[in-house]
Length: 266
Image 1 (cartoon, rainbow, N blue to C red):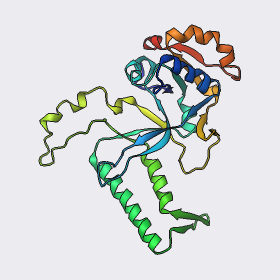
Image 2 (image 1 turned 180 degrees about the vertical axis):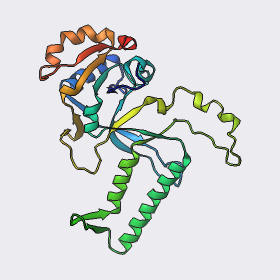
Image 3 (image 1 turned 120 degrees about the horizontal axis):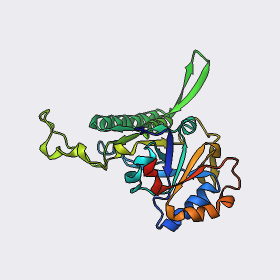
Image 4 (image 1 turned 60 degrees about the vertical axis):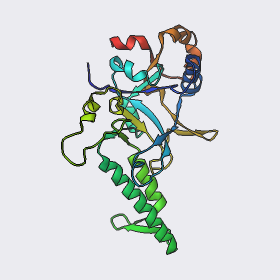
């Protein structure tokens, strides 16, 4: 058994109220239209220091946890999954998340965040909100503003995630850890074990060929050639197979269908 998978799986329908509504979303919104919605997720990095406000960023999340090990992970998400080629999603700019534990990362974020806001105020007082830089190698001139720098900085840090939702309490007076934190790294339900990958549209590269705007919402339009597996609860498999021709009517390549309950044996 491999420690990680060569596939990236998106587990869909976490916020749906019932298994029936999860099935409807999975079939009629995702598979039929061959698209995944960029959802806005809270980003809290740096919010503990210097008054950085929480904000949300659009993203689609995946995991490279092997099928045989995903049961615990899916308790927090759903049993409806789409497994893509990792190589394909990497080419669509998906990236693994970097998990951080040190408060120095949060403090550095807060420092840069407030430094950029201060720079913006000073430039506006000078009536110079933008500036240009010429690159001698290419002759290109690039326009900069504090807002564009903040956007790129946020995009870069949006690929960072806390090790755990719980805060590790540091002993600031001695190198020995606090006794109250003795079991902190023994807890199984930490973000680190989600092995998350993220696809984020605000990359500074401009609109990508796989992004589609529908009724004001941004979607990732996937190529079915690289959708390798469709996963759903065994209870829905027969129903799914009876609708298969309708669901895959516009597919040149059909993925393999797996029962969630059988993943533990793979």
